[in-house]
Image (tube, rainbow, N blue to C red; front, side):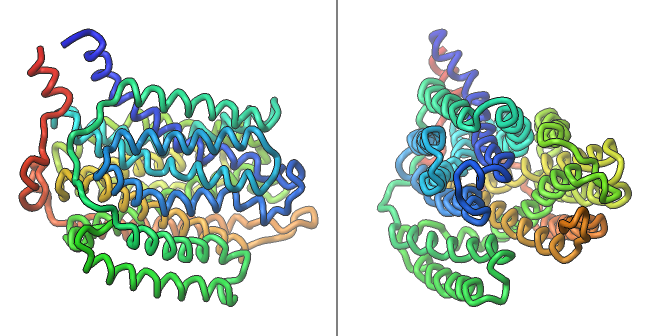
Length: 487
């Protein structure tokens, strides 16, 4: 094997992890801008919020669609397309101050949500079993690592430079990500050829948009209002019809019979619950430490200081990813998932015990991040062990979708709790400490439900094979195996 090929093989995991971190950074960099964007763009606060909502919706829709496309047409090819769309969206944001263009650009950036499931599927195809567990765990942790890095990075740029600079930086990083994937990552030979299920993709898109739009906007539009109720009814009807269509399609977008397997279906349920529990930590911590000191509990920290408070969580997720892989190898990913969810619940217990002292706030947030690392690293491993090789990208795409739905529900639930527990500080309504504690208790209870879901998943067989035989020819030598054959 020549020197260049050896370097590429060694860089496969770091390059894919860089893509995952970049995806999470792109999802969080806009957060520090939100308070100032109405002034910078001349748009209302409600319109500006669509820069977050549009990314959420497009990411939810495109993740399972691009996952299926990756299984059919090549995971590396689709991964590069997702990163390219994300980069294009960032370039458009850097070039304009028009809110309509900004929202459209952020919609393009939502395609990056498919980066993690596509990368995990590539790792299964390309790495030998002894390296696969730690690589998948690292890939899963990039979501939290990128979120922890993105907020302080964006806050520093926004505070000391023109806000468009932030998008030029992310554009450059995105271009680097596309180039590195093109150079260092091989195209996986594992495919599941066939005809792409266009009706299934459109049905899923319409159903998810109705569902997530109702969840994300319910607090502003009113949960009992005609728009929200209509969206939920439309989501129920469209998704029911989509389910019926998928069961009858010869080559469905999502193999629902596979989802019906307990190891797959319960893993998706656990992903939704873990996503809910994890996201409340980020949402509430940022608001809590920035609350005015006049509240009696707030610390009045700046956006930059708030981002630095979240950095320890990112460092912990990076350091613990190989530990979680070892636990899964020794005890099985089901145990790792249950342990992670239990640690998340313990972290919220710390938050409830003391949310006034900065060091305790950071400690509690870090414990939640520790549990999230364990849980998120176990979920794709469970999926990889339960589905055929030709469906790993689409199956992991659905799992990431369930996490996204959980995060959207968490955002809506936390907002609802805080809105109903406010007091006037300086003439403005501010959430009370009791409201924050209720949000922690709610997230901790959901984490315990995730523990129960994890324990209900059938026990691991200890092998990397799925439940049942894989299609002939699906399993091919990975890059490491090919390298050994050529050496």
